Length: 299
Ligand SMILES: Nc1ncnc2c1ncn2[C@@H]1O[C@H](COP(=O)(O)OP(=O)(O)OP(=O)(O)O)[C@@H](O)[C@H]1O
Image 1 (cartoon, rainbow, N blue to C red):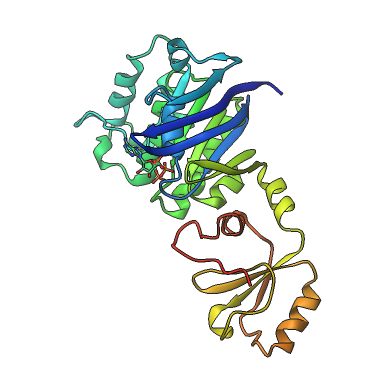
Image 2 (image 1 turned 180 degrees about the vertical axis):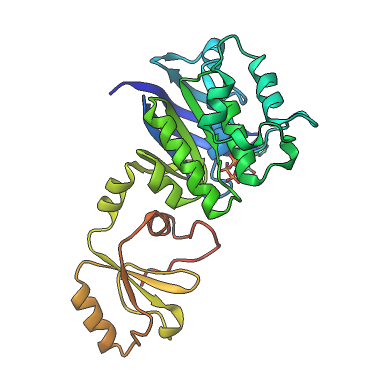
């Protein structure tokens, strides 16, 4: 497996604030690599250094084994969280305009088909829905036939149908041999799309592996979820995490844990035994949930 991108001890400080703190990772050619984490974790700062938008405070970025150069930046495709597009242009005119910025481009009609924009080519881009706009931004990121494509939180705010459609497009791009680096704070998106993920929190990478291996590594048994109101006081289990509405117990022996709950006269109403997902992993690793300010209590 060939490494297309390697990051060594990369850091970014804004004055005395450390937004990215000595991170290391490698991205394999043809894979989808995910940077995951809550708001403020340092994901955008990281990819903006990789894209050449921000200058790192320290560390190295290697592209195809060599220090990344200005020419290499031409081989990247970037879908920003917010891209300012020229007003009054249709979808096709916008694609034509961006196409004129590059020496090497792919045929616009191919991009229109690939990104499912056929029905909107003559529509002013300002009239597109959220999902349609994201597909246009994806087409713009692909216009220079890039080797490596950065997608910065591409499905934030989209409805479930539009997200699914976008995920299918990303998988098609990967199947065509392109490499994708994606940031997201949706764990299900990372689980669905990414071959490798790095979980970031407070500027650091706190776990990195394939989603399956991460879950296997950190959750040996089952995950028992109980509504919080069933538990009057803190229960005497190791590995109990309190989230907003529930108590999660990581159990190596489901039967024994259920027996203990009954012994402690805790109601099993609403109890679920489930497989752990990446949200559960984030809670376990950091003590706080990805989307709310929740607290963990180990008792
Ligand atoms: N130009 C800047 N000056 C000062 N602080 C900054 C600057 N840019 C980012 N930060 C801070 O660095 C931290 C990381 O921000 P960053 O945008 O990289 O996070 P993120 O993980 O991408 O979050 P989000 O999901 O909200 O986009 C945040 O605390 C942010 O306030």
